[in-house]
Amino acid sequence: MIPPVSLFGHDRQILQRLQRRDRYALLLYVFFGAVIVVAGEAAAINLSMVDRYGFMPLLLRGVIYLLLTLSLWMLLLRANRRLVTGLMAEKRRGYESILHAYDSALSLKDTYTGGHGRRVAHYTRLIAESMGLQETEVDSVSEAALLHDLGKIAIPDHILTKPERLTIDEFAVVQNHPAIGAEILQSMPSLRRHATAVRHHHERFDGSGYPDGLCGADIPLAARIIAVADAFDALSSNRSYRHGVSVDRALDEITQVAGSHFDPKVVAVITRKLARDALFAAHAEMP
Ligand SMILES: [Fe+2]
Image (cartoon, rainbow, N blue to C red):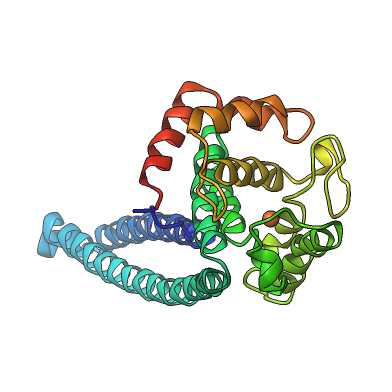
């Protein structure tokens, strides 16, 4: 089974900010509450109330008041966070349904292309994690990977599923898919941030790719990672017209074109033992 693509990156950051803010608010409250209790005790002493009631009952009263109001604060803040978490979960479900709708639409056009998005998303996540990217960046690049071939929706079926070699004209049509995918994403506010990575996932490190012929570090890092994951899946998956090669062979073929097709730093990561083992394990789980 393919592990689900994490979609929590941005939401998780907001929740962490909210928790930090709540902790800060509670600390401030405890500090000022304690100041008020101490000031109250000082006033009670000055007004000779201590002589009448004793010191401990007055102090206890202040502490109980502070604890009760602190508990109330904590309950309110927790309820606030639960509400925010619920809203985020609802938003996430809507977001996931968009991604799944895209994946299903592509599956209807071409079985290989449909599963391809989810596999590339998973390989991309493994590579991004091995590169030491932050959690939110890993989530983001993985989401972009899931959507990387979105533009293929606009490619005619007879070209997309053609088992024979494509003609020059047909290949020119296929080459439009990164730009079309980016254009579709640009029109969707919740997915717009992935448009750049999708547009450039067929650029090559030496500048010989498409659609813009970017080279080296001018190609967004997310696109450079997706390009390697995309090639790995293309080589190691079964197509309608051929069987996929072994993981070792796929990695070797990718390594041979490091520096020309692919970013050598990204390729170096997938050839490290840990990442290589993770790719082996992931590939074995893929349908
Ligand atoms: Fe593509």
